[in-house]
Amino acid sequence: MITQALKHGLTFAVIMGFLVGCSSSSTKEDPNAGSTGTYSSSDSSSTASEVQLETVVYFDFDQSTLKPESRALLLAHADRLKGTNTRVRLEGHADERGSREYNMALGERRANAVRDFLVVQGVSASNLETISYGEERPIATGSNEASWSLNRRVEIKY
Amino acid sequence: MRAFLLLVLLFMGSVAQAQLTIQISRGADNPTRIAVSPMGTQGGLRLTEDISQIISDDLEFTGQFAAIPRRDMLSFPQTDAEVHFRDWNAIKAEYLLIGTVEQRNGIYYVSYQLFDVVGQRKPLPRITEQGGEHELRDIAHRIANRVYENITGIPGIFTTKIIYVEASKRGTRDHYRLMLADFDGARPVMLRESSEPLLSPVWSPDGRRVAYVSFETTRPAIYIQELATGRREQITNFRGLNGAPAWSPDGRKLAMTLSKDGNPEIYVMDLVTRQLTRMTNHFMIDHEPSWSMDGNSIFFTSDRGGRPQIYKVNVATLQVERVTFDGEYNARGRVSPDGNSLVTVHRNGGNYMIAVLDLKTGRTRPLTEADLDESPSIAPNGAMLMYATRSGGKGILGAVSLDARTRVSLPSKLGDVREPAWSPFFK
Image 1 (tube, chains in turn blue, green):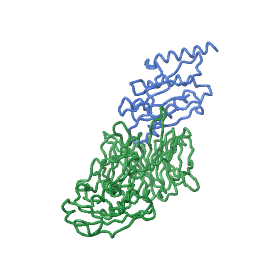
Image 2 (spheres, rainbow over the protein chains, first blue to last red):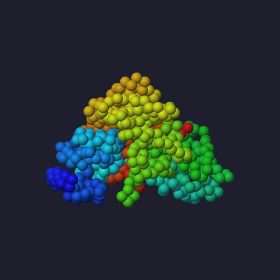
Image 3 (cartoon, each protein chain N blue to C red):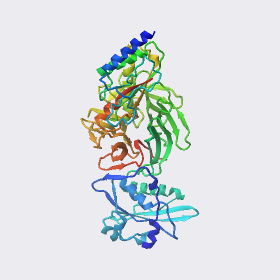
Image 4 (cartoon, each protein chain N blue to C red):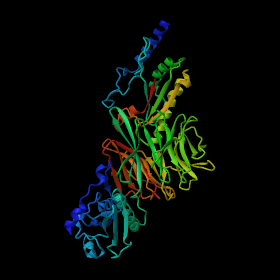
């Protein structure tokens, strides 16, 4: 059991290494100050095996297809969730451009894309809830591509 | 005479408390010049509102009128006998409005007379409006309605209201407020507040209720709230999207978007039986329903063609037809009261703007030119629409005439203001 856990921890560590090194810190505060805008789940139930995973994946403008660079992170989440009863909320978001209501549907489509990926990886669909906030909860408030790219996202909430 | 006026000019005005202030950024090319002479009072009567100023502001809001400043007026007549057309001709006034205010037993009587200076005639009989002290602003708006309709032939919108959403931060928490105000932003009243998103307010056709989406349960749900009593009811509680409520013209049904069956589709709920009828069936997004004026079809946004465009579905046959073809993005359509035009959030290679499509000719014209314009809501007289835009990093409301000639902005003193919903006429 312990070795198993260690092995998992190692896997996560390796995957984390892949993740562009942008996962240095939890930057929940001041999302406008040129930060990466990513932050980790504040869930404190980590055991020795659990490395803090990034919990945000980003999308291109008007797109809901997963970017290649998101796959490793989602695989890590799938590994963590598979065979457990952990309930996760997938919160989809859009940038501010275009119709506010239509952006609700875009956010949902993004959350569904993450859900579908996790389900294909073996995570139980009944443990995944998707919700869209559209453009209501921006991480960055500027009206420019730097902000918009941070706001087009799905947050994985444990 | 002038000394007399000083009393009249003493006013407080609830404008001071308004959240939204009006700035007219562009008016029509040849606005009608009207002089609204200060209302006369007797016996030291002090008014809490400057009725003449409110009437002038109302008329100027439309862009169709230019109110002549008081300092340019040669006299301030109160009775017909005091009106000398040459004085008003000299300052190029086309119309003149005079009036007096009396107060008896707590009731205010505002009597007014409109003059056509060019035609040297009285196009309306002398009319007296009455009401309590707190109704002086309403009286002013009613007078403006009468004057506007007499001169333009179009009903005035000065007694209509708007509902909008205001979002701000309280510490780190979001704070959403659903607000009701006069059409010009005056006298705001809070209808609902929440730390979770509030959005998509729409008026019932009778002007008595509002439907909106609230995330207060941490999931979106549609609510209907009675304006007079505050009584509210949760209408939907489905998995996924519960959004974009839209009342049928007869007020009996509510169209909405639900994604309970996997992806967003348009549904219609009978508000009496609560029965749902599915209107669309497509694996792409169908969203933002809006009824045609005859209630026979529903316009909606769909990206079934690759990008968001407006389609319409026949409520009886469920036949779907594409409506917009100009531009790479058309969303959140709203039909004008005469049924001839459709306004959308439109993009054609550049900014998101409000555009109007002539449903007869198929021609699309932009109405705004800023970026990030959205949520158009047409006034019940079809002459203007209100929309949400951004200015100085803040969400503000704007209004534009459907001929694009007049543009008004209503900056907010508080947080971000968005999603205006223009009321129907109140019966």
